[in-house]
Image (cartoon, rainbow, N blue to C red; front, side):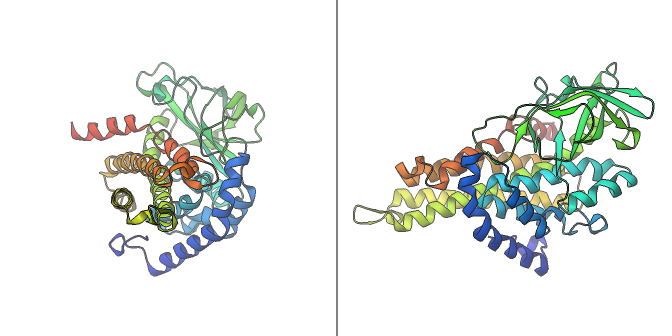
Length: 383
């Protein structure tokens, strides 16, 4: 599947997408099992993506990117996720980590950091959640205190993607604890080599094992004034506007996982013989595959609609990005579970990829805002 013409991908973009598809089939999918088994960050895939300009997808040409827009980014993440969800998260997280700077950063900050992210030389990380402040950023405890020439950060974050491999950590900290609403949060670009910054032990996860998740710790970390992102005290707005857009990457990842599972189950059903014939001739299996394909296609349409709204900065973007992430991730979980069922016993063992896909799909319902939070976001637009 590719983006339909109504969503305005150009022929050059479609050709680029075809190149990504072939690269995933030939080089990424064959690595997916070993990446999951080892739980190690795949530096070879990172270099592959850098060599083929995939990290440039979230960026405009001014900053060294492809300038191809949100829809192309979503389509590319989907293609990668069909073969390896952990690898697709590299590109999605590059978008997430750069969005605060793209939306609110100074020209100097953007010129200094974004080109190195677009080339893949630097990876980014988005540090909002904390051990006691996940869905509720207002409970944030990380503090930033004003000092001469900058700020001193103290605290810890949790559940942070790209921990230990990122070069720039976009960090949200409380700068005015006396402010009631959102507690005077400010966004900062923290460099990985800053004194007092470290990553504590990485999480041992159910899925997405090739993407490191850990706990950044800040102990009197100095951040210069020029690394403040947006206005002091307006970090909550920076975070929310970022998530309105970055949810699309997770929706794309979910669609890719669902399509990958559907494709594998469909091919398996053509070859598996039961009762003297391929199981794809059994109505019970046919109906499962039909529902899997239909729901995945519906999720893709909603995702691409939301991506088209992002292209035009439509005010309905927040609602549609929440709906796309919610629906696509729920579909991914349902479809991968059904794919395991189609394969039967083989679906339950690691030799076949649908077991991994089911574990990976679960995270799409949780991160970038749980699906319960997405329902709150959507409901508020209806009030």
